[in-house]
Figure 1: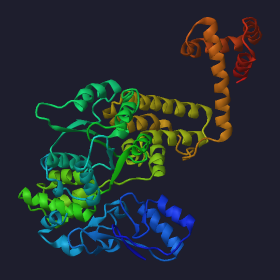
Figure 2: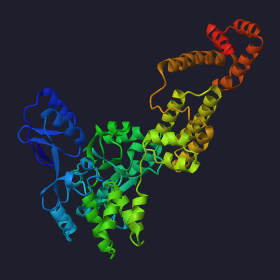
Figure 3: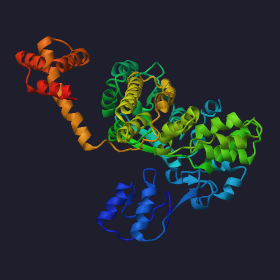
Figure 4: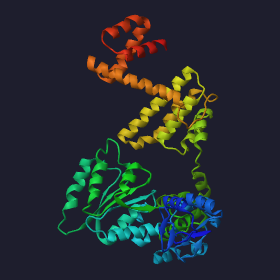
Length: 110
Length: 397
C-alpha cells in the first residue's frame, strides 16, 4: 500500500480497536476525506502496525516541494543518513535536486 | 557567523517544515486577545525561532524573548513581562512574547516559573509563543493542553543540501557537490548545524575525508561502559565512553546497577560505590546550580574515578535495577532510620544531618565495645525498640 505524506488516503475497515490504535499513533481522520499523516504522526510505528494488520508492504512517500511528485525515500542516496520517517513531509525529487534554480522554485511554491 | 547572517530572512525563505510554518503563520496572523498561545515543539535547528522572528517581522510584532540563559523565576518573569504585557508604548507597537526552551524551566533556579507561565496562558494578553525541544517532557505535556501545539520535524537532507548550495552561491564559494553532500549527511536534519559545519570547512582543502572522520560514531551503552573497565589505555577508555548515547543521569544509573550486579568483593564494591557516590554529588550539584558548562568535565570525572579500579574481569553490565530483596532492605532500614531521627530531634534538639554524621556512628561504636551498656542507656532514655534493634543489627554486622 502506498501513502503520500500530506495527502488523504483510505483504509479498509479495520475494526474499532485498530482504529483506536491508528488515532493513538497520531493519524488524523475525517469521515469524508479519509486519513492523513502529518507532523504529529509516529510514522515508524504506523508502518509496522499497518503492515502487520494489512499483511502487505506499506510505503510512505514524501512529496517534492517543487514539482509535487512523489519521492521514494527507499531509493534516495541519503537513505541511510536521513531520518526520513521523522522528517517534514516535503522533500525534493532527484530531478529538482539537480536543478540549479531549485531554491528559487522552492520558495516560489510555498 | 553564517547562521546569524542568514537568520533574518523572509518567512518563505526558511526551509523545511512547510506545513508547520503555515500553521504558525496563520495562528499569529489571526490571533485575537485571549486566544490560546502557541507551543512549537521540535529539535534544535528545525526553524522554530527563525519562524517566530520572521513571522513577527512580517506581521509587525516586536518580540520580547526570554531564553534559557535567563533565570526564569516567577519574580523575574513578572518583572520582565508584567507591565509590558498590559500596557502599550507611544507608537502602539504590537508585542509578542517568546519563551524559549520551556522544557528547561525547572528546579530551584526557576522556582515558580512554570506556575507563572500557566497563569499567563489562561488568558494571554498578547501572542505568546513557547518553544521546546522534547515533546515527552512533563512540563511540555502539561503546557500542550493549554496551547496550540505545532510540531517541527527534522529537515530532509536533500532540502538541506539545496539550502547549503544556495548559501554557498550567496557567499560566492564553489564547494564540490561531494563536500556539500557530506555536510548535509553530517547535519542529521539540523539546518543550523549544517550551516555551521559548511562555514567551518568550506575554505579548507581536502575536507571530505576529514568530515568523515569527524562524523560522530555513537557507541552502544554496553560497549561504552565496558570500555571504561576493560580498556587498558585511559584515553581510549575516555574516547569510547564519551561516545555513549545516554544522558548524565542515565550513565550514572547504569554504572550503579552494573556495580551492584557485578561479582565484586567487599573492598572493591566499597571503592566503586564511593566513586559512584562522588560522581552523583557532582551531577546533583550541576543540576542544582545549572552550571551546565561544567558538564564537559563529567565524563572525564567518571573515567578518572572508575578506570583504574581493576574490576574488568568481574564487571557485569546491567541496565536493570537491583534485585527487589536488596531494594526492600534499603527501604526498610530507611524507614526505621527516619523514625529514629525524628525522635532524636525532639530529644536533643539537633539536626538530622548532625545526628546521622556524628551521633549514630558514635553510638554504634560504643555498642560494639559494650553492647549491654548502650542498649540499657537507650532504653533508659526512652527510645523505642526501633533504635535498639537497629543498633543491635549494626553491631552484629
